[in-house]
Amino acid sequence: MTQTRLLSLLAVVALPLAGCGDQKSIDGELSAKLTQPVARVELEVAKVAPGSRTGEQIYTNVCAACHSSGVLEAPKTGDNAAWAPRIAMGLDALVTTATNGKGAMPPKGGAADLTDKELIRAVAYLANQSGASFTEPPVEGN
Image (cartoon, rainbow, N blue to C red; front, side, top):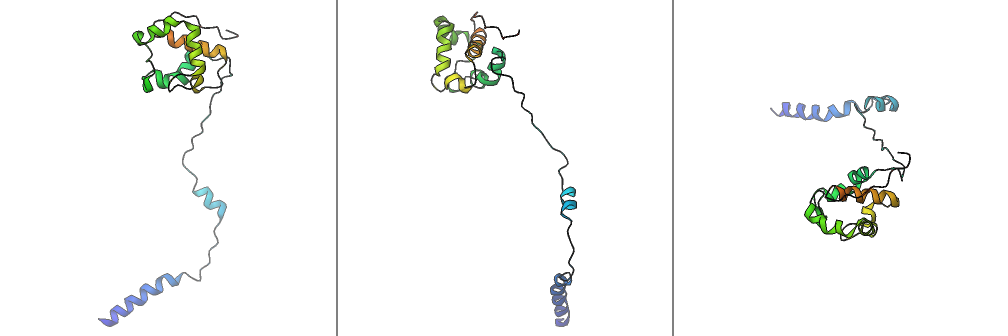
């Protein structure tokens, strides 16, 4: 019994040592090629030139994050009662508020690259979804 244990112990110790003298070279390029991912995702951001964005595009990409759900006390899009006193102030007053920011809303809703006309378009679009009938400045070239 002790002899069996001794042989088992020797086998366990000898097994890892058996490959010590075998120096295999690893081909780095082949290894990298064999471990390539099976898929790759590439994101491409479609940039729209400042000045050419519509009110709807700006609303969708900037304003909707807060105004569609009313987060941080933003008046919800389509809530005519909440927007009525704001709309009564007029488009110029709403644009001034959007330009400077109000409450948790940063200036220009956080989209510092908005041109003045784009901001007017966005404000008009948002207010029009909630009962206003403001005219959005046209996009140049349209």
